[in-house]
Each structure stands twice: as C-alpha cells, then as structure tokens.
Length: 127
Image (tube, rainbow, N blue to C red):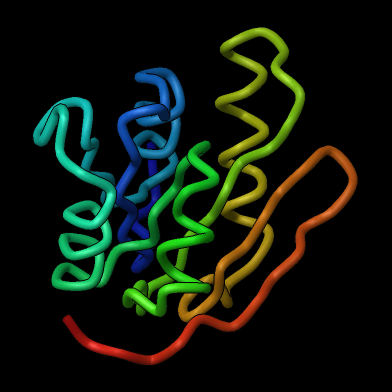
C-alpha cells in the first residue's frame, strides 16, 4: 500500500517507465512526459512544471542552462540524475530513495550523483 505524498513530479522523457512506476508506487503524483507529452521542447517541460508546481526529474543537463543561466522558471525545482546505471530495478529504487531523502527540492536545481546531492537556488521568475 502506498502513502500519498504532497510532492508532485514531472518525469522528463528520458526517465524510464520503471522509475515512473516506482515513484507512483511510492505515493508520488507523477506525470510522465514520455506518456503524455512526447517530443515537447525543454522550455515547455519547464512551463508545465511551473504551472502545475511539479519537480522535474531528468537526465538532461540542458535544464541547468535553461533554469539557472537563462533564468527560466522552475519554481518547484529540477532534479538532475547523474548516477551510474545499474540494473533498471536498482535505478528505480535508488531514485525513489533520493527523492525521499529530502523535502527541500522546491526552488532548487539539484544534481544527484553516486557520491552526493548538490543544490543551487533557482531564480524566482514567472513565464
């Protein structure tokens, strides 16, 4: 039985179905770009996340450029996954554990690798 959490997630197109399902099973409200908006631009992913107050989970480093350097809004945060790839099931469990590990994703560009989590505040702008 899953417990509903208040964190809402937008899984970018490069986040696999196993990760999306694991997050949903853990009680997160997850919208998958691959399922609902395949092929949309990164700026549209940011816009949707901003409008729906969702944390973006991605493996695309371009979100750092868009959200931090160009100042496009990501008010609920961006979580960039840079972990070594293991078995798909292990990856899903690791990503769920990372998401559960903190409650302060909102307003940050966060990079997760095998060693640590680095967080940088995002600009507070609207589209």
